[in-house]
Amino acid sequence: MDKRAKLYRSYVQNATSYEYSKLHMYPNFHCQIESTSITENLDIHMQDHIYRKKMKSYIMQSKQYTSNAFESIDWVAIQQASKTLPMKKQIWLTKFASGFCATASVMKKRKSWDTNLCPICQQCKENTDHLIQCQDERSKSHYQKAIQKLFKFLKNSHTHLPIIQIFHSTLSNNLPTSFEYFVPTYEIDQDIIRASREQDEIGWKNIFKGHLSSKWAHLQMNHFSKMYANPPSLRPKTSSYNSTTYLIQCGVAEMILYMTISKKTK
Ligand SMILES: [Zn+2]
Image (cartoon, rainbow, N blue to C red; front, side, top):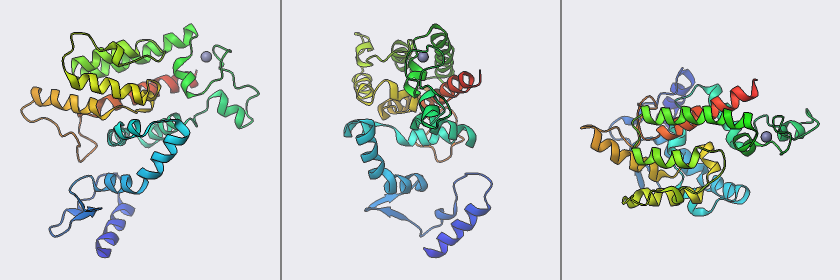
């Protein structure tokens, strides 16, 4: 085991990419975490095991998530989607999701600005939630451009139509609303209803941090399995696999980058 660890460290130190090492795929090597055999995505499983409890208690206490909401978030998809981006974009998104990007509130805390008011509407405290929800006409028009990019991305990625329709109804305006409320009355797929209910528990505004119910990915996977003879894996081993089920997170990530970078550099 130690020999393997040394080999792996030397591989990481010399690697120029984040490609997953094949060193662990030798015969006779296997890994178990609390009696569960891990056969793929070893790095993600180990990180999850080490940090999950701490992250859960932090998010529940400081961000007011319920235990069920935390457990229903597709954390693996967030990680896979972020790996499709260059490091500087990953850092930008991490700052947005954690509330540390340069909003007026943060600038005032850093004593760089005198006010924490939104520079556009001049009426509300500007934090990351307000960046999305600002009701000034200029902000609303900017949001519309960003959200159209998301819808276009979802359509081009062959997203399951009922998912697009629900996201269209709930995200077209930049104000929080209920997903379950917008499930069409003719919808008979119980998984769509369950995904919408779970998304409501996670929260509308948290979609912009990539916090989506894992049920969306399963719905998308079922859709792909009807579309393709060899559907893509739900949990691909490499991040270079296109058109997989973390596509909503990819689309949201690009949307936030468009919204925040263009807004902050104007
Ligand atoms: Zn504003």
